[in-house]
Image 1: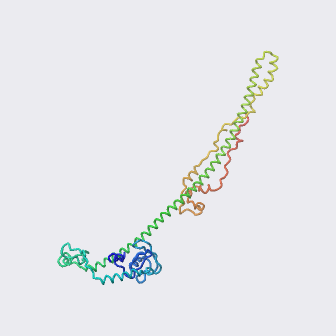
Image 2: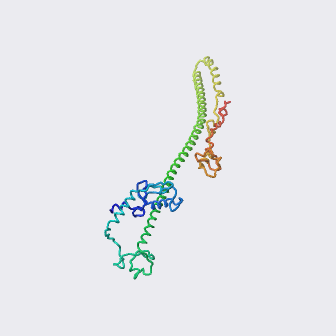
Image 3: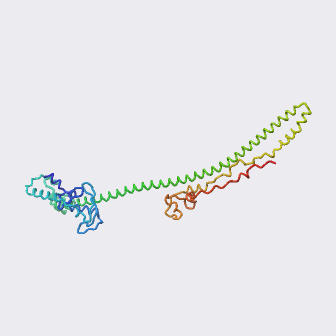
Length: 365
């Protein structure tokens, strides 16, 4: 019977179940009063009528922590466990009909009066004591009360405190769940925003790379044009040098001619060729500085300042200024060029450098 009695103990009040007994969805049982106390402590802001909550809510089973969701009837909507109630009735009848065996209660004894049992409670000092201490001892001027009345009072207070702690634990668990969900949301939002920032910077890199390619192509075009011109001019001078060398060789051979008549026949046309070849006015000359490419110099001071001042959008910024950048949350700082806004626009054509015709060498006079 002792093992049966243990199964009929309420986990809240630690007494045998008091009818009506309600069964929770997790198949654990509670006194309806204890269930209502837990429900009220877990839902302190719900309306109460007649000492019980009259609307739906939730609390956790004190045995397994399973969440119990109640409808608008509150704990009165829980099903009664008639089987447990019948077992309690049968147990009480059997227990009353049987002669109660003598139980050896290990009742504590008074430390001062060793032969006296502790049978009263000192309300003034807040400790249990014996009758002799009240009559002759340290508690003779104190107010006392029977042990059973204080026992029931403090047991009720302890049960209520446990029920309140169960409700507080439920609320704390709910807060912990909300905080964990907030952490997950923060992590997800951070990943999403970092992805957006990286995407916008990649777009900025692509614009800069495209601009660099176009500007280098412009420099390479003029570079190739100048190189082709210089190579052509070098070939002309080479051909002219070869022509002059042949005339010199012919002149040397003519000087070695022993016959005067033959020499005179060849000398006059040769002198004419030398005079004509000595005239270099038809050869072009390269102007000073023709090799320079300094007209393609670039200065990025303003753009560098704008890039260094790229920052996230502030709450006090103008909506009109950040409308195009709302998705990214990146903009140039106040007073600087909105670099991202400019870079999103179509690229303007490169300004043509000084035309090559003004740098071509003029024919030497």
